[in-house]
Image (cartoon, rainbow, N blue to C red; front, side, top):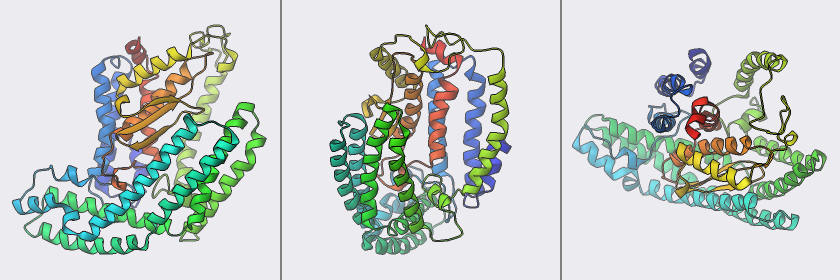
Length: 448
């Protein structure tokens, strides 16, 4: 555990020791508690509740761990969560319950503007979800949706780059220092420190976001939105016809635009364009570190895969493909008959039993499974199904359900504090449920 999880994080200068220890301990809890149960006791419904609580603990621990002022990894909890804690002094309690919003008109106005951008982006997400799930896939339909998304992207970009936001960020930072002094004048308290760090972290995140966004003209935001729509339509058709060549030009445009954006946002020529782009998904992580981690995985995994593939002992795939011969590996080779509606019902039943809340989301079908959140109160997932086998639809649903349960567990402040920690953390949640739970023998005893 120390070599594979904790040691790599020691190389990140932006995370202090308390943060490392908290998140490392969270992962250790998951591994140490889950491992003994996966084989035998996972069928117990109480285990699922415990495992779900642990995945929430990963995010909660990371958000509440003390962080340095220049941290680039973790978000902080919302003020509503902070004000429920027990204060060390009545004076501190009174100040914290009032929040920085009440102390600073600049901070209050800043949050209003940031939340406007959040809701515009969520409105775009609704159109994107419709584009991938319900909308006709005709070229003309895609072109019109691209125009709609481009308009929303332009408005959102203009709101996000409003010069007043830059001024409010500076004023809010000064007000925070004043508020912090008042808050701590009668002595430190856990509640006061947490509230201060929460506000400080939000200002750090939003200042960084503002600087990156103002590097881009609105025309690029509009062009990106239109390209996403047209490229997706092109990909769907290319996939259906097994014709990569028809999609290649759109893919090249995506690469070119991504590099153009990264070049405009890069402030240090010594940073590679890939590292600049990577910061959007793993904040503070350098491409060289990713290469090192992947190299370690490759070194261990490739020989193992070779050993498995060369083994004379082939798995029996008849449960997946009733009419397939032993050793076949793809759904297309099988000729089984698995009704789509029955698969959907099974997937819905199982992912709900794991903890996904369908009352605050939807489960639909799409060309490729994905998760999309419009807020913690509306997190939707999709999967895909085929009559020739049943596993990919179910595993896709469980995987996306892991993403969705994470999103449903986030706070509702409508600010960057209550967004996913990173792509890596997000995938850890989905793969935990898909691989460690969904592919365990005990799970199938439970499912049966």
